[in-house]
Amino acid sequence: MPFSNKRNSRDDNSNRRRKSTSNYSQAKGRKFRSHDSSNDEKRGPNTGSGKSGEWQKDNNANSHRDNAFKRSGQQALYKSERRTPGNKPYDPSKKRRERTDIRTKQHTIGETEEDGLIRLNRYIANAGICSRRKADELIEAGVISVNGEVVTELGSKVDPAKDEVRYNGERLRREKMVYVLLNKPKDYITTTDDPQERRTVMQLVAKATRERIYPVGRLDRNTTGLLLLTNDGSLAEKLSHPRNNIAKIYNVELDKNLTQGDLNKIGFGLELEDGFVKPDAISYVQGASKREIGVQIHSGKNRIVRRIFEHLGYDVIRLDRVVYANLTKKDLPRGRWRYLEEKEIIQLKHFIR
Image 1 (tube, rainbow, N blue to C red):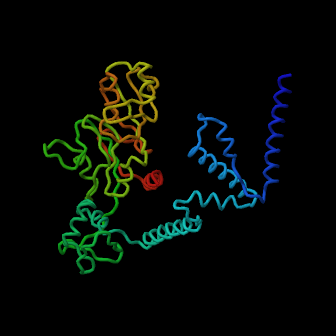
Image 2 (image 1 turned 90 degrees about the vertical axis):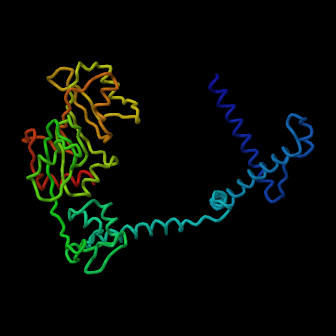
Image 3 (image 1 turned 180 degrees about the vertical axis):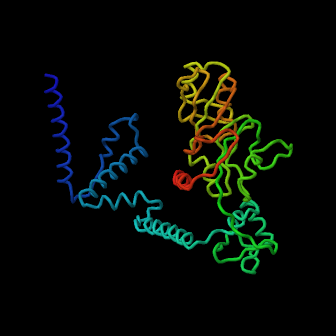
């Protein structure tokens, strides 16, 4: 039978391997010699001689040396020496020391934050004077003093509860953190100041606080929906950074019905002029026509939702952001704003951690 023939041939091969192993064990203790040079000469010009024969001898010698290390229990040592650049012995404690140093350094940073110290540029920004980058310029210019002494070193830290920080002789006080959620209407620009004197979202929240707040991200002039404004620079930076994948949900109304084929294309992702983009989810709005689409996306590229549909030949008639980082428009009419509740702030910070 074929199966029995294969099994017998496999047994014959195993017997030959065991025989070669026993021959080598019998030869143990004698000086190893590779194939006779006479055999190499008999093989003819096709198999080669000279350097190729020497290579064959070196290769056989290496393989038998590996077997010798296996038998003597020194295989791990030989492999580590062969693996290390420059044939240097492997030192496993070296990497362990590096990891220990990193953990120690991170722990030290954590202790500094727990002591209540913050960077000076952050303190200046929280006082509503300027951004952190501009604050670094003020520090280098020598117009910032801490407890009566001028500080020009970037990265300096202060204790907000004890240290006295002054800018051009005027004492700075840390602002109270304010979080305002706006349901933006059409025809408002998402900026703190517009040179063309168009209406901005800051006019809608002018009575919300005396603190210097600014919008997190942006919405187009004709895009409506949720917009967060705050003076918490750390939170704003985290919400804006692409690595945190902050989800946003939009309701889109098109000039014509979206075909199932184009819906699938968008779902699989499109190659736009500035790179590949793929929504987290896309579907028709239940109970509405196929002109109304729901899109969830975390990309922060400029006009990304509009450009997705324009790429396939559709015009966006209406674009409304209904969810931003788990915040919704519930009980918030168009053009109105409200403060975030304490539990919402905690959830928001925990959401992006």
